[in-house]
Length: 317
Image 1 (cartoon, rainbow, N blue to C red):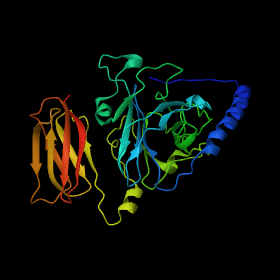
Image 2: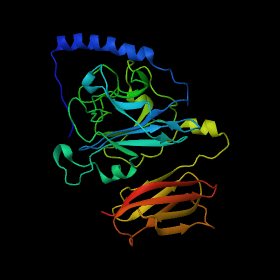
Image 3: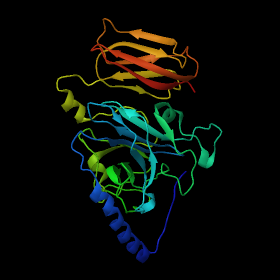
Image 4: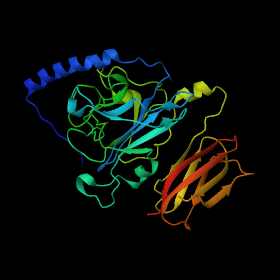
């Protein structure tokens, strides 16, 4: 789904590319050069099967960031003019914000096929429900450069891909392997800021790790050296759930610190399950939730260092 193929005569393509690159140079010249760990960046990118499309933004600072004034979108098929969506909300310190294309109708088919329940469960917001050519910023494919901008859209904060270039089906590594389609890409922990150039060569293997198509388990949290450097001797607190959805009602919880307690709540806020680890030293535990009805739940993890974190999960088929 959502694959768009454009072909141009070689001569016309070369002329258009020169014009578009000149236009985009304005954006690049006006870009803020982000200092390490001082500005939002794209931490995860999903182009999966069907309509599965998502971006994760990461706040590498020790203070919340207001998303008003930021935009995400795409440069379609090598275009020099971006399609952009305004964002709203707040990203907490050292936290993520997951944006998913708004395809949630369970009866949808073809171009309206719903995104996977696992992807819906980790979304912080849904955007761009209707596809029209003039307003389709979140319908990116492997051949679209994907920017994070701010201000009036001319300040480039980060970009995945190369602005003004149409790579064909996808950007590839030195071996010719496609990276930006039918994949989930996760920013390496060593990356401390976004790509504010946009015209430099895009070498995906330098800043990104590649995961198989329709991998959503890494969304909602991000490992970044910014947090480790900033907290000094403080502990980094993160946890993950796998699989999500937990179709067989068995759920593995993995935390960065020793577990104290795990609680599961239904959408009404009622406690549905609890496990405590008073005398046990472990950072992983397999929950067996066979008695729970199918639905979306919240898993709350308390760690022995005092941190308490929560995530949504879909349990059952």
